[in-house]
Image (cartoon, rainbow, N blue to C red; front, top):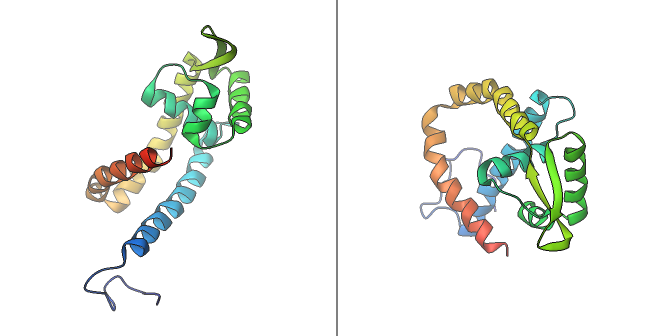
Length: 161
């Protein structure tokens, strides 16, 4: 397979094969994730990690209480990794871990008010960086990308189990 230096040069009229197209899309998403994660970590309060923020963001999106094992499955990390993240967050007062009343050995995690405040602070700190990116790229590409990216995420989420 030849490398193309321009999207217009030597374009295959039929377009790339489905697997090649998917690889290119996921490759771009991976690079974007790495660049965004680095930018994110540069503006976060001291001690706040991307892993901790994603847990807070999960609760901000979905609310409620979750078992650590359910969070580990949602984030596709080991239970030990999630437990470590949650313990660090609990020590900072960002989450509350309580006994599961329906399972004596189980535990449930919920975000605390301090965790909700931290989430808001992180979003506020990201605001100028995100606004600058949108200003540089334009609103339309973001608006146009949202629906297909959401469809891709929901499909991958459905297929992972």
